[in-house]
Length: 469
Image (tube, rainbow, N blue to C red):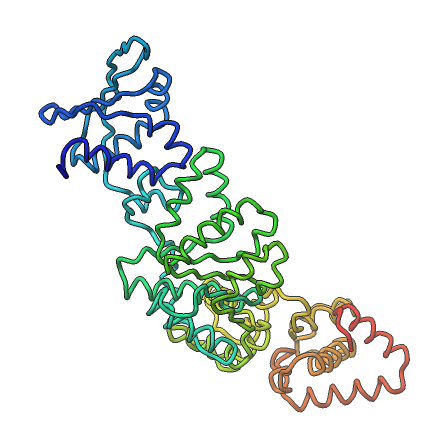
């Protein structure tokens, strides 16, 4: 009879088999013999070959057994053991099992993405995809540097696992938008297919989960959990360079998902061929879909990104400030966002307008790139330090010879090392007009031709900038 207690017990064994290793099943569960089931008292009696097996099951697998029995029999079942104490004389004793474990509704949001408990993989629980819902295709501005990856990513989101772009491996330098793109794919996929199990995980978190599972002897649960994912997104896989066991386990998961036609998306700061720790079999797998490079955005794309952010956040930033930020951020979207957020904070705290001077100050502190462009403030500070005068004195209306010299040198160097027009330089250095800047630059150039000591002074100041002429 299909729904007989014995048939139900066989279903239990099959479910258990899917949630433990083959060796664990053969050792602890295959020897269990079904005796009978009392529907009225909801008691299941099984025979085990020894007291040791009984104690081991009760100590390590009681939760698994409770969940399986509840799921198959449809209600909490009291497990009772008949233990063989003398096989030759067929002597047995009966022992009560633990009280059935209460089966609560899964709390995915509280568990985050920790390695799941047993049976979570057998019947997939609600899953927090760990996606940043602000990183969408709508906010991912298209440009020459990202057109192909963005187009492919959108196609994958709308047809996960059904295109030739599986796996999708995207790489590029830090700050070029990799994390935004792969998040956008996940967000779009969840919008279109709410029932899909989509998961974003960093390589570092995956490694931590694997290490925890290894320490807690729950590797099989860890693997089973990841094998239930429909769209697996892993960021920064280059961080697995020294994690050989983590990589081997991921390959096992990868291979399983790939054979089932599940979508896999990987992101790295370098292409697969430069991941020296990859074995040939893994390199082949990673390369069989599509490898797409994200280049650093050019200045125009940076401007478009900044303008889009201003529209989205209701910010008002002058066009010349937008262009200055775009030319300074060195193609890093992360730096662009950091500068804009800092500008907003400074303007609110100090109740000031967002202008070029404020942008220069913020960029000096916020943009973390080598050889970042000099600002007028940088130059003025260095020149004042060299001649031992204060910026307040230089910016005053005084015509004192020492102050005039510092103004002229600062204007000359500002024109040489920044992209600012003379009118803007004059405004930032003493509030002078463009004709004063032009006159100052001419005076300095003439003096450099005839005054070796003055030439040496300017060389010293320029060397302090750590920039080549």
